[in-house]
Length: 265
Image (cartoon, rainbow, N blue to C red; front, side, top):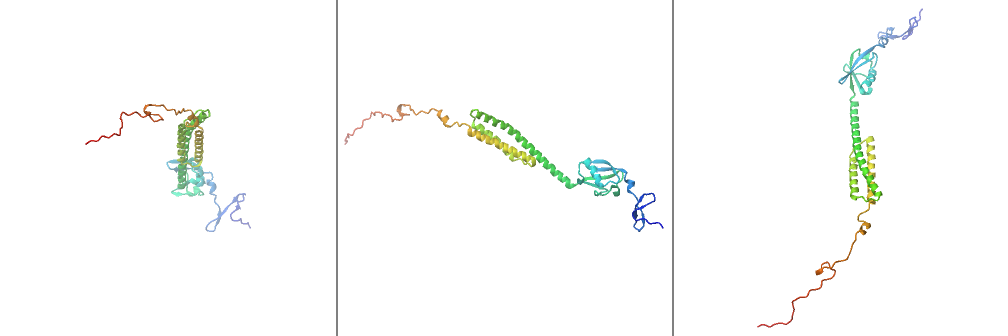
């Protein structure tokens, strides 16, 4: 009597493994190997992405997840940012193309995930804001570079003993304060914020330097300057006592005053 093989595996006498499957009616039959028939078949798929089309050649048994990974190289969209639709229905990553009915020259629609798209727009706006802040800080830096040279020139003059006008120091300080106000009005994040902070400290250091120079600058009303002015208290005498410290000598009068009285009828 011949021994029966176990369900699910057997041998056909040629040392080849036989797989079995149980049909709905309870009949045990040899399992059909449908995978091997398509394992080496390549198909061409037309993927629509907005106004663009991508022609891809993939294995017939690939999944939609595999298709997304291929599309990532062509579109720049990460697989998680993609949505693939076939026959009007969105497909999951683990669904196989051939099971879903995708064949050679089939058309698949690619959409960008709305949440991902919105996130990119926000990131783009943020990057534009950072770029604008960079440009604004750079403009202030260029102006401060010009003013800093004037600060150096003033400091050099004072060290050499040259008197500098206080007005020149005040005007230069005010110009630096204008640039400081510009920096305060710049809205910046990330690295741009760091650059703005560095420039603020730089401007403040120049303002402090000017304050020190002003304190060291000789005052035109100092004691040294007063001694250079000759002051005299000598008065010149003029007639009628004008400009004199002494009262004028009284003039003689031609009118004679008498106390004799005359009696009339």
